[in-house]
Image 1 (tube, rainbow, N blue to C red):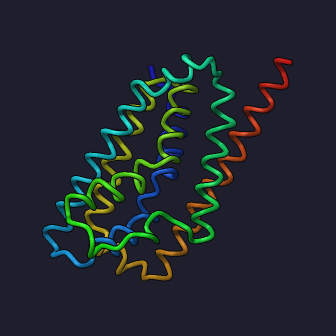
Image 2 (cartoon, rainbow, N blue to C red; image 1 turned 90 degrees about the vertical axis):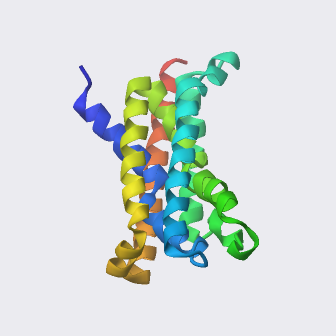
Amino acid sequence: MLDAEALAKSVALLFIAIDPLGNAPLFHSVTASFPHPLRRRIVIRSVKVATALLALFAAAGDAALYYFGLTVDDFRVAGGIILFVYGAAGILGFTEVTSIRPGRLDAEAIAVVPLATPLLAGPAAIATVLYIKAVYGVTYAAISIALNSAVTLALLYHSERMLRLLGRTGGLALAKIMSLLLMAIAVAMVREGLQNMLKGC
């Protein structure tokens, strides 16, 4: 039997790391020069590639931990630092999309880089998947990836409608809030890891 609370935490944590709500305006701006049908095909391909990448890390990413003799608490601290930096970058407005010039890239290239990775399956999401697997298990990681992929696809597929409802200011505010939540979760991960390390001393 799955623990409902653990599953809810896993799904919520990965949702914040992937941040489909915050990424919706970025997806829209990057694909703005493409016709509507092509835009939607790009979204579908991006989510598929991102899902495959996260599944790969969920299946085999922790092998590196054991190979290098790392503990779960080591990863808690390292993953927390990565998430904190990623969240801080979002708060300050430094995101991967700032350096993208859509006119110089074709649709297939944009779907994979930068949309699938690093915007969706980026350092924060990968670190979160490994953290979920280490703490809760691979089943929770797999379910979290599947549910978040479905939600992300739905939100990005209808991003134009959502952005009309939120407005530009609302979309930016939501992205900042999600980044702040990510930073708070990162602090909690680092604190938990350090506390466990000190107990073992």
